[in-house]
Image 1 (cartoon, helix red, strand yellow):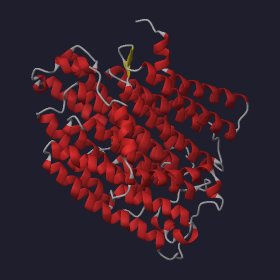
Image 2: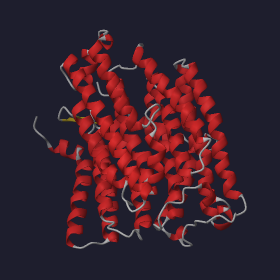
Image 3: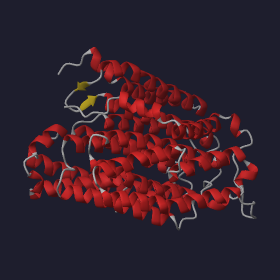
Image 4: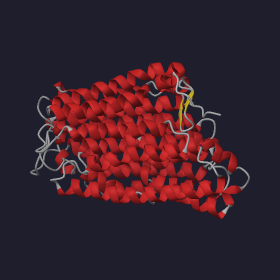
Length: 485
């Protein structure tokens, strides 16, 4: 097919991010400047975000058989770019005193963002795999960026080895599906496998291998073991990126794949995904109860939240796509705020991050505004009313009840009850009197910094969505969250 001007407009966000990476690379080759590299990255990401307005005027449009730019992909592109902007902002303050080269971090981040943008626009297994690998490969380096710290190096190596194995499972599963159906497009797979082909031995093996590979990428049980270790060892801004951008991209393409190829219809795969959802809710929350590290707590919490999201994937009714989009938006805002506080307390870089709970004991008496932000985020993760997290869980409850998935609804209730304990435990720690343990504080001028302002805005957004969610709901509905025919 011939690329037209409309096709180029549709690809504008992806092209702007790639151009930004090249410009940062050339700037580094000419003269190293952490401030310049970070500023160029933020400008490029903002330009890509603004370009979505132009993209919306030409969407929906198919750009080659591999990529579909529609309102569905535009919404998730916006989420990815906003989350990446937040992580870039947090990284600048964090890396300022890193005793090594800092500029390459922004090149890795830009490459990973480009992979995420391609992933949410994929309608073909080829673009799915390319986007997934383009997003994942830079994350190995980002997780191990503070490589002089043992935990950071261990996180990078562990994520690299396990992610490579997951990619092998995914690729082999795709090969088996292609052997059976003769096509790699999502719609082609759906049409070829419609007539009870899900019971074919090759298809069962192929779909099973793909579930293993994608299950690792979104860190749902029983493929979750890497998550708390990588979250703990990676630098705090990287943990924020892992918990938001990668989850948005992979879950968005999962929803598109399973909507176009009806994999969650009645049958064995429906049961497998439902069991994974329930297991993620229970295991994630139970293991978080025993943790003494805030980054590990959020890591296990993310496993549980992906279990809640899988409920929408299993339901796959008219409201499921809207519920998933709203839940992801609320989860991303909340998680960015929580990791934002951890990053500010750990900034500038001074070795291992402030992850242990005793680092936050009595934080209220030293940094009250920072404590208020983290309190709001913990309440939102717990799903307390008047926070964004409550709105997200309300939608998940709704799709579960409408689809009569009573045992998954029960899992959401049980998981939320378990989660309330460790979220409250974190909040109580913030208001206790300071102990004799080592203290970690954000810089005194954190409120004047862009990172401090950002976490305050996130806290306000989380509260505003909880009180008045209609603008978010309208935005999701106006985006036309419908699968292309």
